[in-house]
Amino acid sequence: MALCVAILATDGVEECELVQPRQALERAGIRTLLVSPQKGEIQSMQGDVHPASRHKVDASIGTAADMELAGVVLPGGTTNPDKLRIDEAAIAFLRGFVAEGKPIASICHGAWTLIEAGGVRGRTLTSWPSLQTDLLNAGARWVDREVVIEGNLVSSRCPDDLPAFCEALVAQYRDKTA
Image 1 (tube, one colour):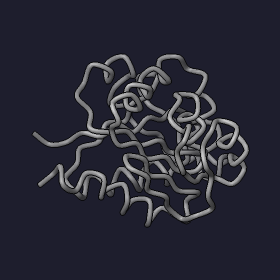
Image 2 (tube, rainbow, N blue to C red; image 1 turned 30 degrees about the horizontal axis):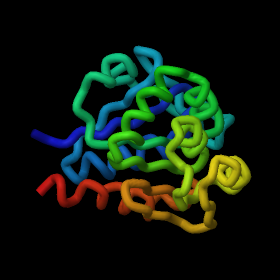
Image 3 (spheres, one colour; image 1 turned 60 degrees about the horizontal axis):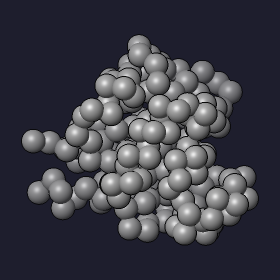
């Protein structure tokens, strides 16, 4: 059975941070599932302010919570994780991955959601620079690097880091797909 990785996102997700990791996983033979609080479609953005594409939601959080998922990707954009971090169902869903030690990949502002789910204390990660104080206050060690890999956690700063982020993301599952 093929692995399936959730991509947790909602309206306002940064287009390239949703699309490029998804494509990288699928090219590696890993199924992806776009999971969102709402059904239907979500609106992605380019640079937070320019509407990009609409993306079909594959499963609501309630449906996805009952599925066997290998890990989760947290794309950024500022609006997307800001909405998710106040959504109780989204946080409960993400806490499951944190508790089980499953692979989690966060880019840009995606770390906001991970903070809320209790997944950063004692961990080293990177993010968009403006999240540095939030991560430090949540007990994380913040570093300014293209990609940080610490155990089951992969993090990157911004769209410019997507090549390294996607490579590290796929590597999380490499031995599980053989």
